[in-house]
Structures are given as structure tokens and as C-alpha cells.
Length: 243
Image (cartoon, rainbow, N blue to C red; front, side, top):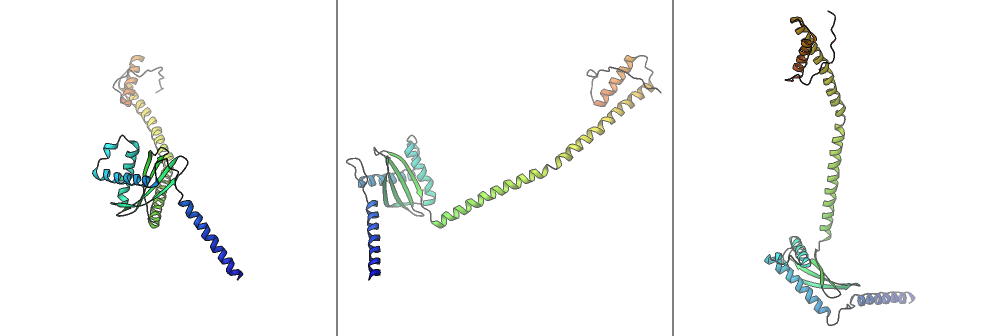
């Protein structure tokens, strides 16, 4: 008997609690004088119908100057791809905070349902209209998995690219050493070529003074450097080698 009374008391408490929660959800909004909840929902329905009509007729540009309506039309048009053709309104949910009233309009469509959230200020002026498509749990998980795969794929691709770039760093010293060796080899070759050229000219011609010798040396250097003129060369001293 005691157990039966205990169970009965628990059931009674649960019923009272559920009744209390239901009464809180059914609580009326503190609307301005002269405006009822029914009028508010009718106004929300008219807004939803207007959004659909404007988008179907392609008259969005006529509302470009109104920031709120323009954003609402863009949101509705973007959601149309996922929710399909508009069928009708399935219900409303009203709520209120300190400064705004929120009306959620449940919209039935050919592919997926949606919720149009309409926010009004204390003067009952619409400040925001947003269309949110309602996806199933499976669709949400599929999108989450796809985003995860794309994110991880991007990260791995970047890591592979960085590793390839780092692996190429080992060839930089070899390239620098090759260029340095080439320059080192070219310099003695040029000097030897100039010396040989000057020696051949001196052997073939008897030079009477240093000016002629300077001219010959300058011409030989210019020829080895590929220059067409000797204006940029200055011979500061001449040392004769013993024969």
C-alpha cells in the first residue's frame, strides 16, 4: 500500500510539473495596446507570402533600397534551393525578450521544411527576417562529415606542399657551389687568355713606348670581355716580365 501511494505521489508531481510547463509556454506576450497575437501571426504570414511572391516574380531589385526587406529576400532566395517549392504555412511559435518580439513561422515546402524567423522591436517594426532550412539529423551529419573531410584534405595538401619545399632546400648549397666553381674557373681562364694575347702581340710587334703597350693591353682586355670600346679601362702600372 505504501509503495502504491509513493508511486501515485510521484505521478501526481509529474502531472503538476508538466501542467506548469505547459502554462508557461502558453503564456501570452506583452504586446502593445490594440495588437493581439492573432494579428501578429497574420502579419507574419503576410510577410512570408510576400517574400515568396516577390522572389517568384523576380522583383527583388525594387526593394534594394530597403535593407531589411532586401536581406530577407536574399535569405529566402538562397534557401529555395534546399527547401524546394513553397507549399504553405504549418504553424507559429511566438516568444519575447526585453526589447524584441520573435515570430517563428513554420513553412512547408516540396523538399524540406523551413522556419522563417521574424524579429520586431517594441514599436512592432520589423528589424530582421531570416529563412532557416530544417535539415534532418542524417543530412546534418553528412554535411559535418563532408566539412571534416574537406578540412583535413586541405591541411594534408598544405603539409605535403611544405614538405616538398623543405626537401628542395638540400639542393640550394649544391647549386651555389656549382655557380661558385664556374666563376672560379672562368677567372683564371680569362687572365691566361689576356696574357697570351698580349704576349703574342708583343712578340709580333716591336713596341717603342709604354703608350703603345697600354693601348695593346687595353684592346686585349676589351676583346676578352666582349666590349667594343676601351674607354672604361685604365692601366695604372706596367710590369715587364723577363724573357
